[in-house]
Amino acid sequence: MWRKFGAGVFALLLIFFCTLAVSAQAAAAAAAAATQDEVDREAPCPGANTQFELTRCAARARDQADAELNNVYRGLMKDAGTTERVKLRAAQLAWIKFRDTHCDYESVGNKGGSIYPMVYSFCLAKVTVARTKQLQEILREGSEQ
Image (cartoon, rainbow, N blue to C red):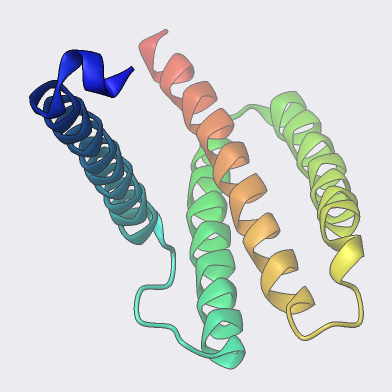
């Protein structure tokens, strides 16, 4: 079949498919590099190289999230009436039980391993940040009224 079209057509087809393969490889490499850049940007512990450093970083993230939550919670309590304070306190205590139980569940597969404290702390931080956003929204709504 190639004899019928000649070596020139075969060479052109070969060049075309090689170029296509190289382009696909370059596109895949660029996508992988972009994905790695996104991971690096979103990495909560840049520069952490050991499990100890990652665990310490997770504990800092947890503590920072907890401090922010407490600030927002205190602001809500300060502005709330007596009945609202009782309800908010009950809701917050129930939420703390939820948070701890949820993170126990989320990290159960790592129980007993060196990664467990990091996974548990990052879970606490993530859930606490979400709760802080909820309380900030309540605080914002209250100030608009």
